[in-house]
Length: 516
Image (cartoon, rainbow, N blue to C red; front, side, top):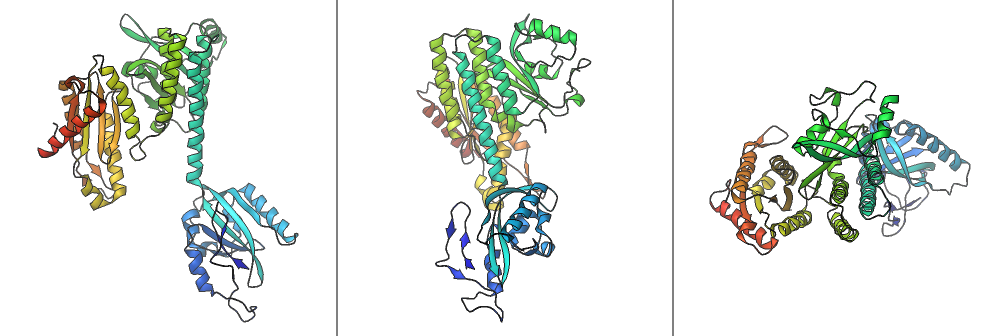
């Protein structure tokens, strides 16, 4: 047998030159020999799993990496059929491969680069990439399988696929802003179909928030037809074109209308904020209400329901570009924007959405590029008289956290800080990680006195909410916060950021855990 290191995706990488490998025994044909113990050492250093089976499918060897991938120690697998690690479909494939090899000339390399679903010791499914190669070992035909866990790759590919669907939906929605011949109903029906597809939701609506006697209510521009009897079907047909109106805000969607914040209810029938369902209405198993903004203005909301597995904040953040596009649709509908202005807005928004495609991987909030882009838009508005105040937040003694507890804990602390700051902000505020342990907060429409109150609330909240290590140890945290505002006449966003940074260092010099 010729021994080579096989690297997935990179072909064969020879060990300086091919080495003939035979087991050490009295009958071995002369050649370059490698003791079993040496071979075991090599195999056990591989990061990929290696399983060797005989022609009957019986496991003869498994390296240490297999336990990390599938949960089995080698002694738990020896003598068992490799089928114990396979799902039903892959068992059939495996049996056909063995049968094919036995009846062929023995030169076939089986299953090169195949993806399979393996069974973990705990019964869960593990996606693997597997390459199986026949080998002659000690005079017997064996099969060497190399396994690689591709769970993370699958998840990454799923995220990429979802992001591609979102961007297509964004482009379609924004393109409809300037399309001739499309009615409002057609535009929003298409957007709702995309929203339901991207989120795997069963039904939902997109609506605009209007006011009557200073009280808000919801008028739909698109809603799934879930009529359940003759009366509701007739009502839907008669009113869908001009939109359905909902004035009762003592409901789950009413929470979003009143607060301007998203709501997630994965057990809606037990949620005290529910308004109840009419008799015959389809079951409501999970629900998410999503506010729709155009800039800082709260214009409408979308409600989606019955996603398998429920809803979470990660999904809400992922579809934010689509919600921004919906905000553009509603704004265009309200303002009756001309074709030229709509084209300009489409181009700018598309560019912004492409540039804002990634978040900070540690905290989940906007990264430096994204937060600066958002603040640039707010700064432009401030040149027309609207206040903008920046908070520069720096975590005190963060290096000690990394040095004492490691960078993994440090990352968790940064996520804890980001979540803590987020809880203190308004929906219209902007938050992003500027670098290291530094965060930028943009407060549109906020003067120095109000900004100082918010900064103090952030500082106090961080101080009063320690981070707990896995062993329950309390880790006290604090932050120094610098404030600078557009009312001071800064000529650029860069100058405003620098001023807030300088103020933060002043807070450091005063002893930390304070606002300057």
